[in-house]
Length: 250
Image (cartoon, rainbow, N blue to C red; front, side, top):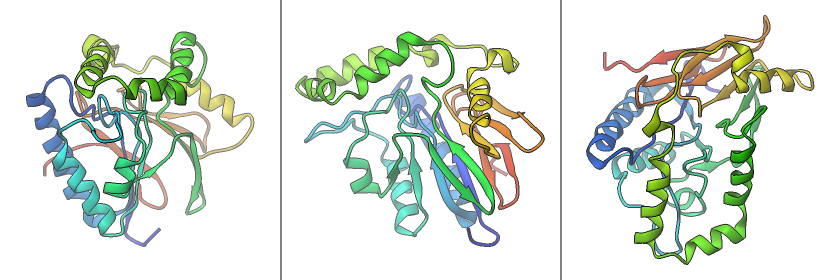
């Protein structure tokens, strides 16, 4: 990590939802934020649900997002690594985005050490206790046979089906925004379970749509990145400590 540089983290842009107009407004804010932080960025972690839906057919991908994808390519062309974690909405990222934009895709939790601090990074869907139905669905959606079968649905139909499914999610229905306390926060519970096996200074997740910076122990924190639908939050590591921030144009 270079001196005077930061490592940035963000998640849950849900680009494409709920409609083109609102998504485009959000995309422009994301790009503005990326431009703002670029001079200080050592690397960027996009921690899932960046797109509200994504599927790569052999000869087609969902249209749109050109401003965002161009900015990502600008980062990687400049030698700034961009790490991408498929979330529950965009798990069907295959070769197109890595080939065209240079992102590094992590399909499982990424464990790393930076400046002596240990990080556990993942979108967070399907982790922790409960939600057995989704865990079964996740295994089905990640199955190569399921992906092969979906690819044979015409893109106009397949993308329409997927977006209808996506719009029935938390983005459409809403979810309590407050921190519920550790006993009700499955990702905090999951992080504590991991701590019993292996120590990490920072557990960084998305998925929850609520900005959270919660002390698990004196030396370990659970950080949820929030979203760019209501909160417009991100986090950064300055080489010594993590900071959870709200985007400001100033």
